[in-house]
Length: 300
Image (tube, rainbow, N blue to C red; front, side, top):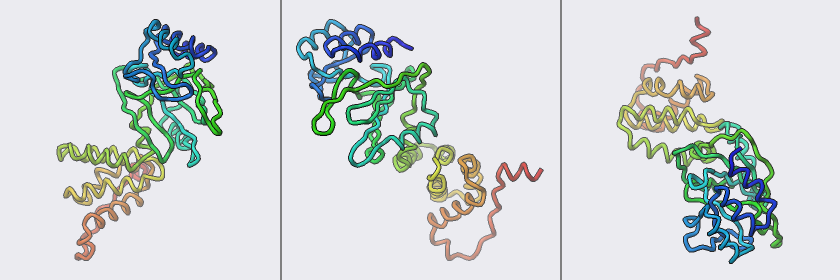
């Protein structure tokens, strides 16, 4: 357990005025936010965060009830997944499905927020900076470089303006980084599609098939056929033939859990979609079927 985690554990039992300089003295960069709020009280906001305990002491002498904020990403060494609970829905189910799928259950700490949501803290990968993003429809936000969160023992308001604390509820001795892009890919397939399309456009022609293979192989359950269909359309539009497309994408699709008959049907559908004029063309020779690795083993 590192020094910063130990400091956050100890600080949650202190008054805010003592907790803030204690955190700073133990290497946690902080800055003050409004009482029971999230708005920075210092001019440069999170850019002014510091682990200078003397400076932090002066801030909290001026604002003794200020909430304590910590920048996320490389500035503090933590990326944080913020799972929200709102009237429109909760992010818990989506997050737990994603964490299980991505083997991302080794968070360092879990903090209950005043609204009933949760902050999951992950150690960063040294030298890696991940950007912030917001997934409104799944009620999950990612706080990385350029973001910040409110630390215990700060407080916030919930229903009827009642004040509730940020409460540390779990600490894990085994903690691993989380891949922010992989998490968003799982939560928002349409965002991933745009990201891969942008990446695809920057690749030389011969490398594009590899980008599409990666897209197909990483589709979660429920998005597998759609992922294969999109990738096959892109290959068809680029002028690749049916057999070439099957050879390029089918192994990745099989790895994601699709059966060979589903793969062939989806690729055929993609070619009809990409080249609708060929639907009325004279019948062509039947393309050679894709033989999955399972079928090949059974045939031995």
